[in-house]
Image 1: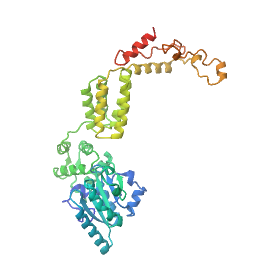
Image 2: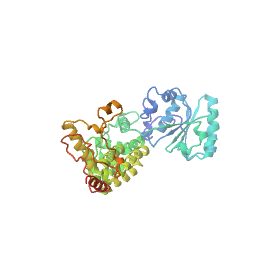
Image 3: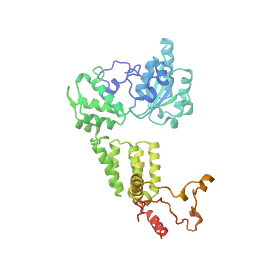
Image 4: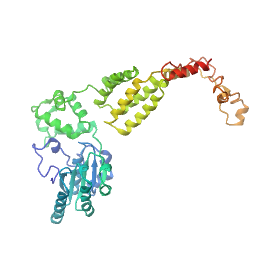
Length: 433
């Protein structure tokens, strides 16, 4: 049970850094701008103390607990904080009784903060309904699981779901820097700094989890003398993860994606998976990776396996819909399929030759028999005259001029003997006699 932002006590060194740095106002709260930006209805409701019961759904370390305490702070509510793992129906009744007594004695409302609410059974969930209905207490439930799949409709009708997003790298950076500089609640009184590489590695490994970042920072600070600098080696040791040299705007970023694409093009699935893993562990945007695979499916595989582009497009949609970390499975599937597909760049070279012709040579008129003739007057001028409809021929094609007059660098498209394109090659040769 806690009655304030810091559990009813003045924040001190005995509390974890993440708890000491908990925001005291919405202005100090970092993240969730899609909900809490200045002027947003949700922010106004919190500031006015009229939000009501909510379920906060988010990954760990995104600010669920901090937001719950801010909701209570602006509503001037007493916080009863419990874990759904260790509380039952009997304790809920005791919470409700204390809430009634508190309201009668002091006029102060009660907010029940129920962490890991997805562990509640339907019976336990139902025990909350009457108290929410009559206003005995307000509920803020926190969960990392999809509440629409695990909470009852009756509870969801009384507590709306707010979906929080993982913190961005810049937001985690801000929290770390704030903890290092804050002399009242953070580490500012010790004059500590952190190496740029160490800071970047900590941010990347935190992956949007502010609690993880601040816990590791606090442990590193305990092993660093006052006025000292926290080194990369210490952060690597604490995280048990070596830093990957991967700057998304630098040479290594482009070297890795280059090696990845060249490995897929070269039909080496093992090398391709290795470079894919490097990018994923380094935090590369999976959408960037799948876009490059979409291009490769046409540029380097093409008609040798026309299904490759279909699978790549499906993979891109799946990555967008599923998100990380599960999207890495889809990327691995797509990478191995494309790497093991027969290869042809004939279509890619064909469009390059055609583009070069169009950009550098005079564009002669389109043959009259190929022109559109939607009006009788145009037909009288010879538009579409003499056009042969290929389907009228038993072979399904006819000999007629399609290219305009000119010194073109044809054939643009030269099918290879690889994969499905071999059939196209045979068909083209038969058609050309």
